[in-house]
Length: 113
Image 1: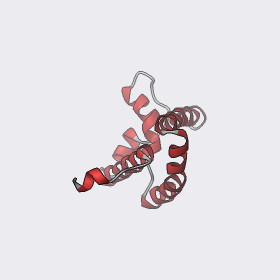
Image 2: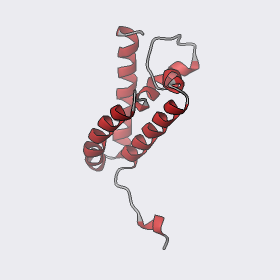
Image 3: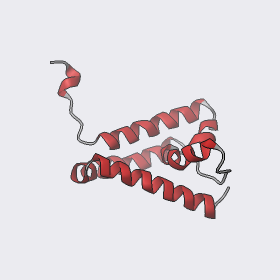
Image 4: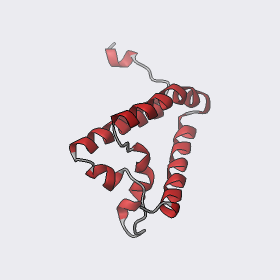
């Protein structure tokens, strides 16, 4: 049996979220923040622009810097696995997506820039 078959994760959604957020942070550093502005920030833009819909979900992955990322991930990695174990991966993913879209809409309506 290989090493990777022995490892089991009880919180795949939380761990994937943390990993995707880290990837977004690295991409932001590599692009000088351009990827954060293009993909990981919620702001008012035309509903005809296809990136508007990506940003409505993707903004939860973006962070302003390493410290911001660490503070958010500390809380998510402490609380998230227990929630995912209790309520299930599908319910947690649904909650993340609904929260992302609602918070993006609030940001776009009340804080357009």
